[in-house]
Figure 1 (tube, rainbow, N blue to C red):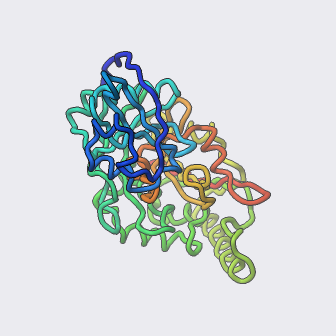
Figure 2 (cartoon, rainbow, N blue to C red; figure 1 turned 120 degrees about the horizontal axis):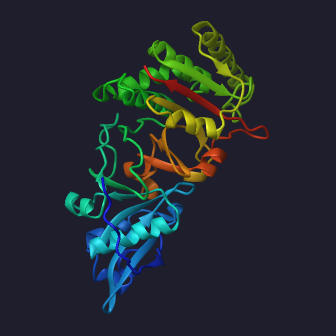
Figure 3 (cartoon, rainbow, N blue to C red; figure 1 turned 180 degrees about the vertical axis):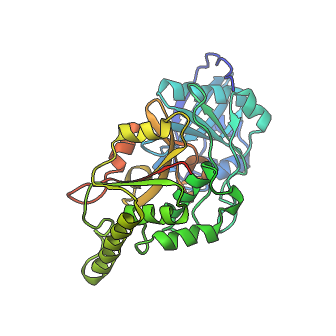
Amino acid sequence: MPHPVPCAVPYAVVPYAPGAGPSAWPEELRRIAGPEVLERWGAVDRAPHAPRLVTVPGDGGWAAAALVTARPGTAYAKIVDAVGDVPAAARAVVAYAEERGLAQVVWEGWTVSGEDAAAAGFAPLRPPLPGGTGEPAGPRTGYVRWTAGEGVAEPAYYRQSTHFSCGAVTALLAQVRAGVVRPESLDREAELTLWRDATNFPACEPVGLGVAVRRRWPSSSVEVFLDTEEPVLLDHLDGDEREWRAVLQRASRADADRLGVPVHGRCLSLAELREAVEAPGRCRHVLLLVSLATMQGFDVPHWVLCHGAVPGAVVVEDPWFNTAAGETWVDAHLLPVADASLDAMSLLGGEVRVRGAVLIDGA
């Protein structure tokens, strides 16, 4: 999709006051933003995502403004809403993103029309698949504009229905993108059935996840990368609770050997990850285990699907988003994560840091 050449738009970045109600907003903003927009902006504490207002000056005040947020460690900016002169606000946010070297701007479809988004150079995002507990929270529509080139091909998005089934969902999303699984068959039954096959109770560790993928789809090439032979994801447990899960992990390694799933005892490098997802003519995906400490503020292991790359960032699908911080599916879908951030957040553990990944190659 060709991007309109942006006009030079003067803009200013104004701090956003987390939790501020509509009455606390500057008069310049209340003149151009409706009460329902300001109510939505102040309904949650967006502080974890560095909320800010990108404003465009006008006669006697602001001609336009946009509330902009983003997860830490990522390479995108999200427009929650643009108010006033909407085209000017969109141009200002795009300029803001380009000046900061961000790969992408996304726009939640609360108030913007498809026509106005297209006129600003934004393409519509695919609506998310119905989640296991109903439609994902957030707007029904969303839009994306890559700051350079065409970005990457867009997969389907599905939100995990539990706090522990992220590994199963990323594997299913990879197979949907590869054409092995029909999008309409990705539902809670499929999610929990694959999780049951892969789980180390309740988490999915890398070898068990790789084995479950091979069992479910024998024609798919699967490789596991894990730079330790010790049990993983058990630092929070001790005694018998740790030991019986370690037994299951040893059993998964025996299953991998029996099924011919390679378990490489080394770290998958970021360069290798990028090479895998960028390979021309191949449909390769990396299920990557990361900590949510950077993006969400709590050090919990979590699986994401790496499926593409742009300069300076790897593009992932995150099957979970934090509604308490104002996130919607637009934050978690087609998400560019800065290379250095992804490299750091995918090293997990205590004193000894390890990286776990599952590479799936085609059907």
